[in-house]
Amino acid sequence: MSEVNIAKRKEKCENCTKQCNKKQSDEAADSHQERDDINGQSLQVNEGSQLLLSACLSCDGCVSEEESLKISQQNLEEVERVLALNKKCDVSKHKVLVASVCPQSLPFFAVKFGLDITEAAHKLCGFLKSLGVHFVFDTTVAAGFSILESQKEFIQRYRRRHHDSHALPMFTSSCPGWIRYSERVLGSLVTPHICMAKSPQQIMGRLVKDYFSKQQKLSPEKVYHMVVAPCFDKKLEAVREEFYNILLESRDVDCVLTSGEIFYLMERRKVTVEELDSLPLDQVLGEAGDMALMRHKGRGSEGFLEHVFKHAAKELFGLDVYEITYKTLRNRDFQEVTLARDGETLLQFAAIYGFRNIQTLVHRMRKGRVPYQLVEVLSCPGGCLSGRGQAESESGGRVDKALVQQMEEAYSSLPVRLPELNPTLHTLYQDWLQGQDSSKANMQLHTQYGNQSQSHTKPPHMQW
Image (tube, rainbow, N blue to C red; front, side, top):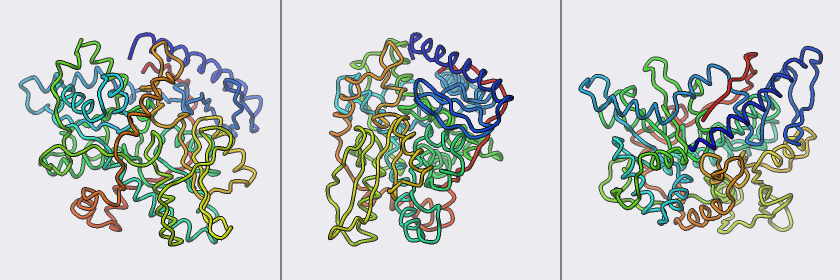
């Protein structure tokens, strides 16, 4: 990350901290629910909450000192420290480095390298392995697990909707900014509605630390798992307590680096694309040969809405949906999809991205006026491709719209494959999880979300 971007982020943190400190002093005089205005955006805050949110939903000012310490270890210097240890003679401290690259990060490198996505992925793999990374995967297979488990949970929720008031609407759970906001601010209004399928990142963490490490005859603590993601909030997700194994002293994801941080490392080392080797990505099952890169439905995200919508239409109503038509409501980031038969609305889903639209959703939910059975919620306007870890302009502070458009075009060039048709997923369900409905599948692929109160510590300045 450039020094300019770091300075901009620090400036943001300092401003948020000032507001946060003022709010804390005001709370002594007024313990009732209050409304704070953040950058012109009204935010309902629960009683006793000290959380102040910026447009990204989880500004650095709300990070606790403990989280700050954990996140501070997720940086280029820490990865280079691990790499340096591997070069020394003390074999007892050696780690097998595994890098998992999110599919939404690949378009960033494609644009920056001036290559198509497959060629860019090979160059990125070549760069990571030149550093000393042993295996490089893409996380599409983990996203496939998350989608399939979300589909299954939606069907279950839909069928119990008449006797469970928390069954619907179901909110997607792959965006850590949205999850953090729900747990820290919205609480019981929203958390029972959040899908319990783990995010692709954390399923990939389990896949690497549980299945892959066993295949390599390694204990999990001997594997250092790094994720390349488009979003800074993924660092916060990686340090959640439920994703840490106390007995093994091992996290499912040891470090998250943004696409921008990796590109900055390339610039710092003065590496040119032309001199990089082109190496195919590795496969979790160890298949020989280069597997074609695929994507899931959806514009710049994992496509949870589209996959669940088509699955539910078939499973619940026997209808095959081949193409989905989005109806734009407030703006491009507030759209809905409807399934109707003989004039009757059978399903109504929504894709709601960005802080302002999420606030509209929350307001309607408080009033009991949410007609949707499922809402795909993402904190970044435009979806995951617009994550601030890769889409921020070089001057900092704003999203580079031209870059995002180029990334969207690159991402849409990848062929789509339904997770149901992915043979790797079927093999892993059997070999790793002992079946789709097994207790192990439930344990490895699901988590729980609940209310979290903010600590009363002064928010630290985070410099990512």
